[in-house]
Structures are given as C-alpha cells and as structure tokens.
Image (cartoon, rainbow, N blue to C red):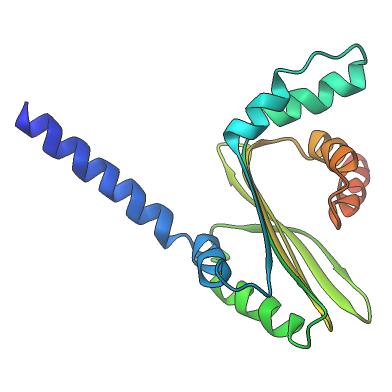
Length: 175
C-alpha cells in the first residue's frame, strides 16, 4: 500500500512539475500579479456549465458541442503600453517551435498576430493567439479538443477580440 501511495505522489509531482515547465504557463505566471495586465481564466468547470444548456437552434448546439470539449481558456492582455512588441517577442522566446505549428500570421503597420496550434494524434489540443502591437499585447491559450470551425463560431458568440481572424483560417482550409 505504501508503494502505491509513493508512486501516486511521485506521479502527481511529475505532472505538476511538467505543468509548471510549460512555457506559456511560465509567461502567465510571470505577469499574473502585475495589475497593469488584465487576466482572464475560464476553467473546464465553467465550460461544462455552458455545455449543459438546452437549445432549439442547430447552430447554437454546435457552439455548445464546441464548448463541451474545451478544458480551459487563459487570456493575458495589456493595453495603452509602449512595449507591446517587446512582450510579443518575449512570449515567442518561450514557445518551443517543436511543440507548436504556426497556422496564420496577420501583420499590419501597428500589430503582429500569430495563431499557433499544439497537435497530438491528429487532434488540436491547444490554440495560441499572440498579438503584439505598438500599444497593446495579448496572449490567449485555449486548451481542449479543438475544432477550428466550431471555435470560430464560439468566438463570435463570446466576442473574443482577434478570434474573428479564425474565419480566415477556415476559408483557407476549404481552398
């Protein structure tokens, strides 16, 4: 019995250490107590509550189906700043290019935005959106079993800034 307890404690410790080693988690942790940032964390439990809603419209059911597969959403954002591009570059120094695949880049004179995914076994497990501009920064991490088409619909219903660009991904994948 002691062996099982010790193995269980070691396993939990290993999982916790791996979670803390995740680069994105480190970035969030670094700035989570900085009051100049806005941080949003939506847990799997919250998404689970949405999944229990009844709906009459098929398109609403698609959104609920997408929500039921989401395990978490974290957003870290900062506006009215002078170092948005520095934060953008700092975030990308932490992102392991072997773990994430770039899906799309949107650049204009004011902002750089990238969408990246972490995929395992043909399933998208994490979607990252990183935006850095002259006067703003945003890092978004969406974790779960992700269908980009459904997430695009979800983003419309939640009005998440920047996610409107996912529609472009969906159109590009149809071509």
